[in-house]
Length: 283
Image 1 (cartoon, rainbow, N blue to C red):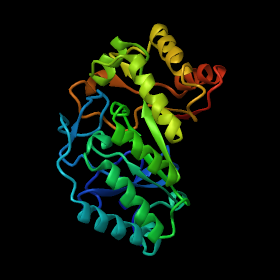
Image 2 (image 1 turned 135 degrees about the vertical axis):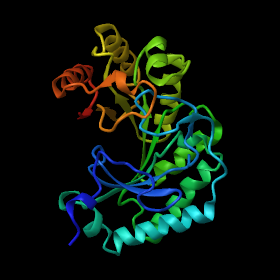
Image 3 (image 1 turned 90 degrees about the vertical axis):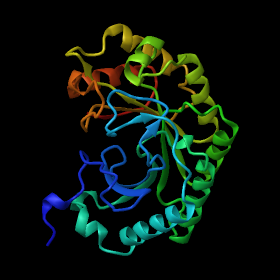
Image 4 (image 1 turned 120 degrees about the horizontal axis):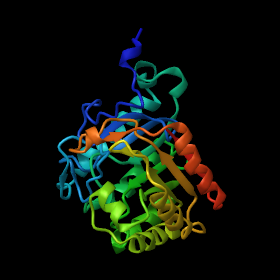
C-alpha cells in the first residue's frame, strides 16, 4: 500500500519527480486533477522573471535545442503508465485520479523553444496513438510575450485542433506594475494586442497571480488598471484564472511576498464578473 506522503500534491510541482528530462506529472489545482507537464526550458531560462516564480536558479535566456526523440519517448512512457499502468494508484490521491491535460509549462517560457511548433504536432500525434485526442485538454501556459511571432501564432491553430487552450499571463495593468511583478519592460497595450491575436486562433484564458508585497495588498489603483486592461479583451477571451500563491518563490523577493486572503481574491473576482467576464478563483 502506498503511503499518503508519496502522493503528488498541488504544492509540489517538482519537475524531477518522474526521472525524465522533459515530461513530469503534477496534481494541478487549476486543472482539477492530474496534468502531464512538458518542460522545454530544461536550463531554467526564461525571458521574464516573475518575482513569485517557483523555479530555482531562474535565469534570463532561451532553452537549448529540444531532443525530439527523447521527448516523444518520455511522453509515450508516462502516458502509458498513467492510462494503462498503476501510476494513479501509486502516486495520486483517490479524488484526483483524473487525467486532465497535457500542459506546456515547466521552467521558462515554452514558446521560446525554437522547436515549439514541432512539439505541438508531436503531442497531437501521440495523443492520437493513445486515443486521447480531443478527450483531454492540451494547455499552453505562457507569458504571451512571443505571440507576435508568425511561427508561434501559426502553432496556435495546431493547438486549437488538439482541443487546446492558452492560459495567457496578465498580472497587472500598468507598465510600472508589470515591471514590479514580472521584471520586464512591457507596454500593456502591446501585450493586449498579442493576447487578441492569440485568442483569435485558439481559445484563451487570462491567467493572473495576485499576492501581497511588503505586507501590502494590491492597491485600488493597481486593481483598477488591471480591470480596465482585461476589459479590453472581454470579447476575445474565455475567462480569467485568478490565483494566489500556492508554492514558495525561489526569487530574491521571496521574503517580501505573502498570500492574500480568499476574501480579497473573491472581491477582485466579483469586480471582474461585474465587467462581464467569467472568472475562476484558486486561492
